[in-house]
Length: 269
Length: 290
Image (cartoon, rainbow over all chains, first blue to last red; front, side):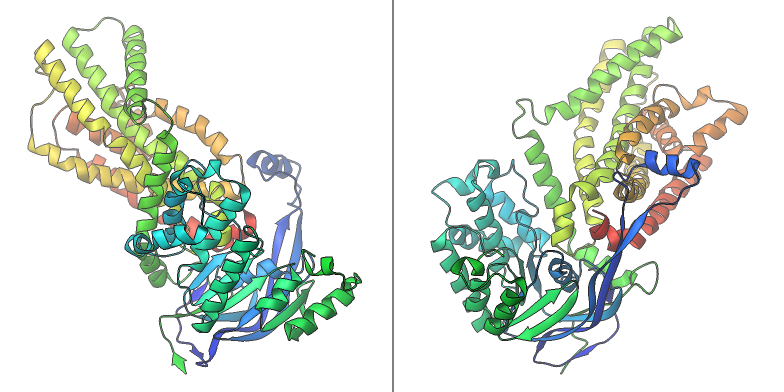
C-alpha cells in the first residue's frame, strides 16, 4: 500500500473513511517529451526543467459513514479522480490525512489489468489478483462474476479484443462489484452496459449498501447520483463547495453550470 | 472505537524517502501470487498466436549462438574440432544466461510505464510489476538449460570431447550463482524501471546498452583472455563475475574462484539495495508521472 502509516490510529466505529485537511498538489512537467535526450540538451544549455504545480485538492475535510453511498460531482479538473485515487492509497496526500477502514475495491479506469489477447475469464482472474484477492478466492467467484457480466454465450472464453466496448465495461464492472469490498470506489463507471445491465448494477450496489458497505461514486450522470446516493459533495477547482442531500447538491451544481433542469442536464455533464 | 485494527489504513504525506519497510515487504510477499500469475498470463498472451510458441524462446538464442560461434571461429582462425566444440558450449551457456539478465532488465524496465492503467487504478507495491517480468525471464531461461545439456551430451558422444567435464558436484553451485544473477538483474531492472518513468527513452537506450554489454561480457570471449590490469574490466561489469563463475562451473567443472564469488555477491547485493532504494523511494509518485 502506498503512504501507509504503520502507527496505531483510532477511527470512530461508524466511520468508513475520515479525511482530515487533505491537500494534494503535484508538479507536472511542462516539457512535451520526458526524455533523457531532452534532459541532456537542457542541461547543456544550463536550463532548468519547466514544471507547473497543480493543486488538485485543497484543504478537504470529510467523514463518510459505513453503509453510505456518496456521489461526487464537479466539472472536469475539479479534483474528483485525484480524491478517489488518494482514498484508494494510489496518490499520497501533500498535507492532511486519510484513514480508511475496510477493504477497498476500485474501478477508477475501465479495463484495468485487461490484456486484449486473453479471454474474459483470464482477465477476471488478473483483475481480481490486481485488486488483492487470492487465486483461491477468485476461483470461487469467477463463475458468479462471469454470470453477472451477462455476456453472450461463449464470449467469456473468447479474447477480450473481440468484445464490444459495452461488454468490456461490463466485465470490468462485474469484477469490481463482486469482490465483496467494504468500500467501493467508482469513477465514471455507471455507464457500463445497456439499460438492463445498469438496473442490475444499481441493484447490486443497493445490496452492497444494505450489507453496510460504503460506495463512493464520481459521475456526471446526475440522475444516477440522485437515484443511488444518500449524500453528495460538489468539488470545484479542488475545493468542496457544498455537501448534503444529492438532490440539493445536483441542483446547486446545475445552477452553477447554468444549464437549467432539462432531462438531458441530468446525464453526462 | 476500532483501534489499530489491520483493516484501518492511514495515508499521510511522505515523512521520509522510504515508506515503512515492514508493511511494504509483508504486502509485497502477500501479493506475490499476482506477480507469478501476471507473468504466466503475459507469456500466454505473448505466444497465443505464434505457431512455434515458446519454442522460439530456445530457438532464438540457439540460432544467435551458432551465428556468434561462426563469427568467433572465423575471427580467431582455425582451431581443433574439440576446442571448437568447447567454444560453442561456452558461447551457448553464456548467451542463454546473458539472455536471462537481458530479458529481466528490458522487460522490467518497461513494466511500470506499460502497466500505467493498473497503477492508476490499484494500490499495490509497484515492485511486483518488475518482479513479474523477472519471473517471465526465468520462465524463458529454464527451458534453455535442458537444451544446453542435450547439446553437450551429443557433442561428447560425437567428438569424444574430454575437455568438457562430466557430472561433478560443482554443478550444485549453479542454483546459487543463478540466485546471485537474478538478484543483480532484478535490482538493475528496478533502477531502469524508475528511470523509464522519468525519461521515456530509457528503454530505447537500454536496447543499445545491452548489445554493447553483451560484447563487454565474457560470452563471446573467455575470461582467461583478459590478463593483468585488463581483468578489472571483468569486475567493473555487474554481469562479468557472474558469467565468468557460470562458465567456470559449466565448461571447466571447477568451483568459482574467491574473487569471482566476492564480486558476484557485491554486485548482487549492491544492485538490489541501490535499485530497491531508488525504486521504492519514488514509487509513491509513479501515479503522478505515468
